[in-house]
Length: 199
Length: 197
Image (cartoon, rainbow over all chains, first blue to last red; front, top):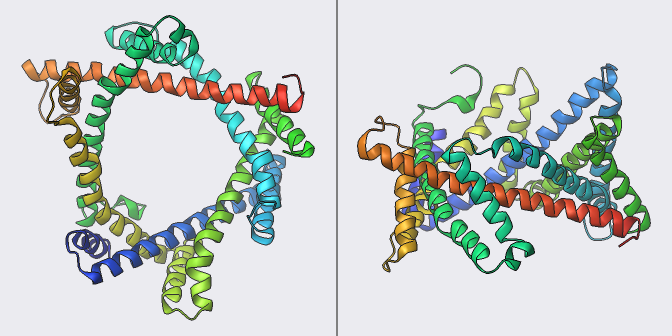
């Protein structure tokens, strides 16, 4: 099945036949539906896992109860009340989910800073280069860097636009070639790890 | 934001920030609530934007393709059964197979050809030369088929420096984005919540 769907999708890209367009649209729709079914399944598995913790009164069950309450509230609000402007679903998203998410990511500023202290010690040329570039990019993009003159902002812009982009292009080309190789292995049945279990 | 919303967001924000002192029940509670809400949000959006319009509504309209889509969904959900769980591999085969087939031209076009096209430009200046050297050197670093010796070793070493510049720039940007989020949360606490700003 993997081979059939894989080669069908590959061939339709090069054959501009109306039937190919129909097949492409239909398979894309199936993929979306299967992704959605998998996501709902993941949500159900998450709820079941917490339900087991609560019913067994295992360690931390009170936190599982909170997670279940939050999940149930969001599901009820979204599935019954709708997701349009002015609904409880959007109110919960704007006043609880989004602020909590932003705070968790902002918390990473402290951990990134401590990681930077450990990782940015200029022990060799590579680490020194990383340290200098990161400092120039940060200083070049804040007002205090601009106050020192045009050199720092211009250097930061050049570092980001030329050498950093060159390395990024190299990585992307490598990823592209690697992805094609993996896709061919999957379609030919050489790579079967996606089936799970023992190969 | 309403007053109740501001208070709720402020309490949640402080609970998350309390982790900076150490792991504590307030942080764990806020963390679990966030995960629960996020899972609920994703499920609701998925059901309302995909499963309802692409499965439920076509079936109600008598469209046979809706039934085919429903079969895929049901096959996927057999995963929860120990006896019929193997059936979930059928929709997975569609995803993996079609995904692999679609990714070959897409990857070659977006990741390889367009990137090479951006490197090989008609006008030659310092930036174009530096860019071309950077791409070739980075690719040399990731070429593991032969051991790095001679000129190839020099190219791979140069590739490391280009990679360090890329990682340094990315790291700098990451720190700045996290700091801007931190400033945003601090502004919210001091301004919207306490009214000090």
